[in-house]
Amino acid sequence: MKITSDFLVIGSGIAGLSYALKVADHGTVCIVTKSKSDDSATNLAQGGIAAVSSSADSFDQHVEDTMVAGAWLSRPDIVRMVVESGPEAIRDLVRWGVQFTRRDDNTFDLTREGGHSQRRILHFKDMTGQEIERALVEAISRHPNITVYENHIAIDLITARKIGAGGEGDRCLGAYVLDQASNEIITFGAPITTLATGGAGKVYLYTCNPDIATGDGVAMAYRAGATVANMEFMQFHPTTLFHPHAKSFLISEAVRGEGAILRRADGTAFMESYHSLKDLAPRDIVARAIDNEMKIHGDDCVFLDITHKSADYLKDRFPNIYRNCLRYGIDMTKEPIPVVPAAHYLCGGVRVDAHGETDIPNLFAIGETACTGLHGANRLASNSLLEAVVFADRAAARSLERLEHEASLPLSVPAWDSGNATDSDEEVVVAHNWDEVRRCMWNYVGIVRSTKRLLRAERRIRMIQEEINEYYWDFHLTSDLVELRNITTVAELIIRCALARKESRGLHYTIDYPQTSEAWNRDTLVRRDD
Image 1 (tube, rainbow, N blue to C red):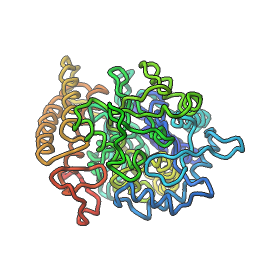
Image 2: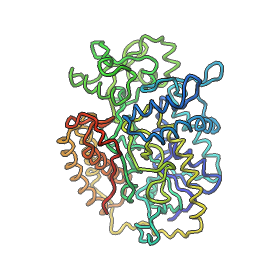
Image 3: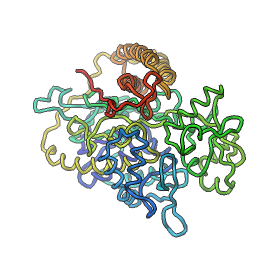
Image 4: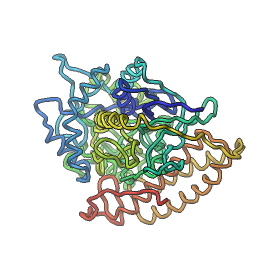
């Protein structure tokens, strides 16, 4: 089966949906998403979106905060472009129906998070992502040029080089996609393809990411020949709920933004020993501080205390967090919340230019899948949603220019060849390798690293990859096998980048190179050899 459109969008978070709405007036759009349309990291985002929105703030301050948080590895031109595009991005979201929380005078209710010098976080209570996703999904459903294919997982990109048609240079022609209901592999052909598949938190054992965050876009782009950058910079969110049944529920940084204090089990506040901003220090510093405190004192967690605020205020400002904590027997109005760090946000990804285009023509990457140059070595809180909307707009503009030249070119794409594959009776192998990859990454490629640990992880991941490659072509594909292949590829890329960077900077901290080096004030780039 073959489906064609002008634009193929893989992923349905804020980046993919914003992009689709921007291009849909000019052509047909197919959105492929491996779960439901609203199952995305966007939907789980609690804190909000950072944008200069008050006279007390300025673009220069937002730029400075971003550069400091990114350990000066962020690209200044990209940072300024994104920051200065912030007000228009907010207007786009409001036009699409997003209802940000406002004060009595109808101005935005701005909050503050770690690393920000001003209150500039627009939010919808503590469910900002859910509100954004709701509005965008509704807008998508109303557009006649957009078709959404839920429960369809992309397998591999189709490129001219891959199918032997690269005589005039390589370009992306679409993707092979598995329909999880029918187990049929469909050829989606399109002159313009955009990856918006989100992050890769599921590469780690403990994460606050949704189950879909398996690094699919990064892995597919890498296999297709695109350059991948800065994969060593995986951000660990400092505060996720510590409870055996909570599945790493995130406690928004906005809680600390509104005055919460991190304490040891004995009640001692400890962040003043690590940074002048104390509990509002950038995430990499807070995560390492918590990790250190847990190791020094032998504790399983630390505690986030905001009991000095009134119960009515907390229930109104953080209704989602309050209700979820209460489900697990924790009343945040009366007792501190037990928290631990967990894998959260990938600051690296597929390297793109200022318009979101990869080095494979007509292949774009936006959102967490992409490495745009904004985040550097550590993402400033709430800059990710802003980046997604801004780059969706820029990628859409460049895509429309490209479509004018590509529309007349024939798309001759072969169907997927399953060869002699059979149904598997060894699913336990997939499940075991899933668990082994994630435990290996958590134990050896976590918050604090060493060359010895990284080399150990590299050997183990290489062995698992050999098993997967043997298994992959012998059996019919399942979503679990596709995702396993992807998380193992992403694990390899994280390890390779971490071994290459001989310094500690931002989210990459290694005991073998504890200092930051000017020689490494550059991106770590990886590309397939063949």
